[in-house]
Image 1: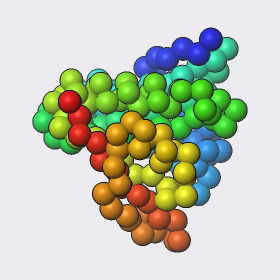
Image 2 (image 1 turned 60 degrees about the vertical axis):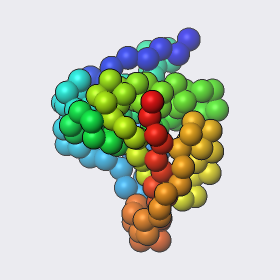
Image 3 (image 1 turned 180 degrees about the horizontal axis):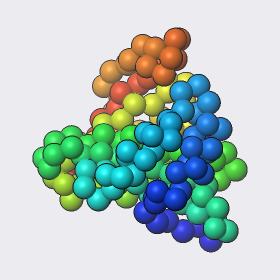
Image 4 (image 1 turned 90 degrees about the vertical axis):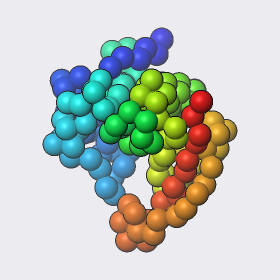
Length: 150
């Protein structure tokens, strides 16, 4: 059974390891994870999904000030568990946090070639509003997507 919970500082080593395997070109550092998780409940919301007490996915959002747009920072699921609705569940949780902070919109960047993630975001109401060249490194472009929150 898959369970969801708030990410904790003690999760950082596992999250860094997963990050390096899922996003090998530009992974977040230990310091980045500590900074983000350290702001949980204030301006950030981070959660993890577990299966048999092992973290299989994680996601985070930032709302700097109430009433400002939300920034979906990351949604990551290990390959063996993709396609089971885990990312969708976590994305909705991030949006719920944003709504409680009066965010009018949610924004995110996604690798232009990540068709699976783009399809998920589009199915959840996100629209392509721009492209950022070399966002993830030389020759690795991002699509910027936005969703109006209710």
